[in-house]
Image (cartoon, rainbow, N blue to C red):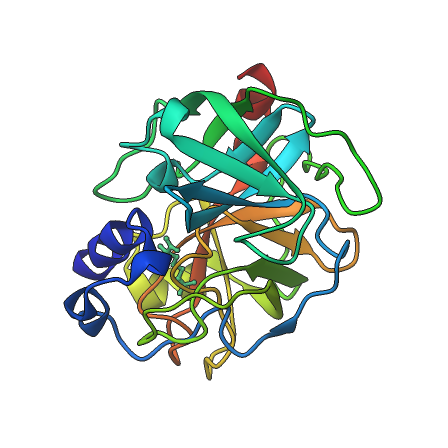
Length: 258
Ligand code: ARG
């Protein structure tokens, strides 16, 4: 899990502030949302940027006017009073609506060493109303697991390649198919990929989420339903190493209760 740990360490640091080159040097060749394209305003009305001291560090998903879901690894070590949530803009640094956070609830089953159960709920101190550019994501049915081959779209402000230390100013997106858990386990190891995770990507690589995309959404391309949260991977967009996402379907009851 050394690579996952490296990514975890990377995920919680404010990449936009200028990450030490050594942190990125430990990663393999990668890209931001790698191999993607620019998103349009309103295309992901539920996506939010989580920031600290003015620097984006993770994505998140607005699921109600006062509630965001994101990765646990984006949340551990954070203090509600020192982070902010921005919605309704293509730019992580400006525009839209920015609010404070009143509390952060990390899933009690989250294990940092394995990234298992990588989900958290953030409660906002000020509600974010729906608008032409802001909306709330639809959660899947509890227990659901997206079928292999399902086309999904992930989006975020993460780095454009594995070796980049700067974030793009605007939101990017990429379409990737769900790959079977068995295939993903063949890449990463049986125990590394749990039933609380889903995997997406191409065998040849080239398209993936990357550092700074963590906590953000991956949605079913046909239904728009939120199926996952960006969680971890070996580098970004590497051949044979798909992106690994929190399986939101296993946490719907918990999310709704917290
Ligand atoms: N842990 C990274 C982050 O915090 C996300 C890594 C996703 N990696 C991947 N290959 N899809 O932003």
